[in-house]
Image 1 (tube, rainbow, N blue to C red):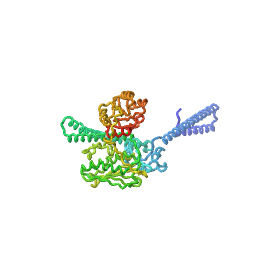
Image 2: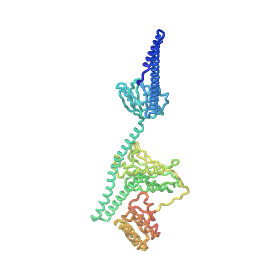
Image 3: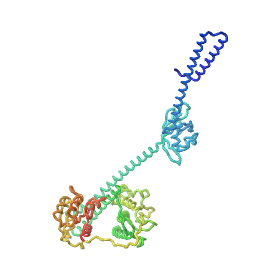
Amino acid sequence: MKIQTTDETNKLRKNAEAFLNTEKKKDLKEDLSETNKLKLIHELEVHKIELEMQNEELKLAKEKAELAEKKYTELYAWAPSGLLSLTATGEITDLNFSAVRLLEKEYDELIKSSFGFYVSSDTRADFNTFLQKIYNTKIKQTCELKLTVAHNTIKYVLVNGITSKIDKKCLISITDISKHIYLERELIKSRKKAEENDRLKSAFLANMSHEIRTPMNGILGFTDLLKNMKLNVESQQEYLDIIEKSGNRMLNILNDIISISKIESHQMEISISDTNVNEQLEYIYHFFKLEAKQKKLHISIKNTLPKNEEFIRTDREKVYGVLTNLVKNAIKFTQEGNIELGCERKDEFLEFYVKNSGADIRDDLKESIFERFKQGSDPQKQNVQGAGLGLSISKAYVELLGGKIWVESGQGHGTTFRFTLPYLIVKDKKVKEGQQAVAEEEVKPKPDLKILIVDDDETTRMLLSLMLRPLGSEIYEASTGQEAIDVCRQNPGIKLALMDVNMPGITGYQATRQIREFNKEIIIIAQTAFALHDDREKAIVAGCDNYISKPLKRAALIALISKYLN
């Protein structure tokens, strides 16, 4: 049955009343027959039922309309996006909870306020254009805006809008896309950083190729001259000195690469001990004095630390490494003038410094010079030797020890590097003299000593045999782990084994464990070319007494052996 409108119902009611009035008049004028009366009653009852049915349908329709309106209201109020109704001038006439939460204001504050007030100044023109297009085109429009909310917080939002066909107002939805924008920016930053790292690493690798090939050229070139030319003693000694310097230079490069790899992999450890600051400064001063003199530079030392406060708790080797790097750089970049290193107390810190009268460092490079892989990409450093890792390593060491490092430079006054360390004084500490390596002439022959050299490299075995020859000992050799085990089992009188840890098949660690099963007294010194994190610990756990890294130096090796044999 068709549902009639209110106007139709009123019209029907009027017609019914008119009909009843007409019938009443007829009743007055004429006496209705019984048949007519029944007919009239029937018609009235039909009309009554019809009206009741229409009334019920209207009631159901009203309930459905109210339910639909309630659902719409709930959907509008709790929609995840902010929904607002605006006038043509941008005045807010209605908004939902998400919009209130996004704008971070009270509902009463927002109603009848201008939405443009919350749009940041740099995107307000975009909002005005967006509003104009909505009313001019009558189709959906989209734009991105920046909103300024509580505490001047910036939010990035995506806005969609259209005009209402009912009241001609602008209906807009706003979605917070701040996280997406920030994530996109972080991704762009990460990509740029990765690209920059790739560029720096490429420059670094190119520089490494040069830095490694240069000392290799000295080593191989002068070795060839020694082999193929008839030279006097002076020339031979000169060429050998060059080969030694080239080898030391290459070793320094490799040590820097190992250090930076430990830093990047977070495997760098610190070893805190009592450290004599004055002694370290004096040692570095005397160590570089000759090198500075050769460049006609004047090097001096200034230290105000009293004797009773010269011992502190820190990592001695890392402090030495930082000071060495800074002084080496000062000599490298100073063509004429002077260099000064020193130390002074600043409250709870010691402040070390290395000054030089060389060229100033530009302001835009004062931070980047501490970045790794910078050498080769910095025009100020392209014509000097070095891997470009020294300052990066120094920064990592200083920060590991709880200090900070920085550079001061400008106005033609040269450059000063400074770094601080926590001032943890060790009281009542007597000054100890530095231990010296055992001199070759002090090593006494030990003809009754039996030594086993274990290494899969024939050249290394030959070199170790020559180094140990002054001891006059009986030398055994093994090229594999299994051979080392067999030699030790067959010769129980062997007192010392130099064990290479990296061999094919049974490694030096495995061979050591097996030898310890039947010989607890033999002294085993691990020797390896790795020299990386945990190598010493691995050697000790395997059963070795000590550890020495390649390249081996004769004085250090003899000193280590003598320590155990004496």
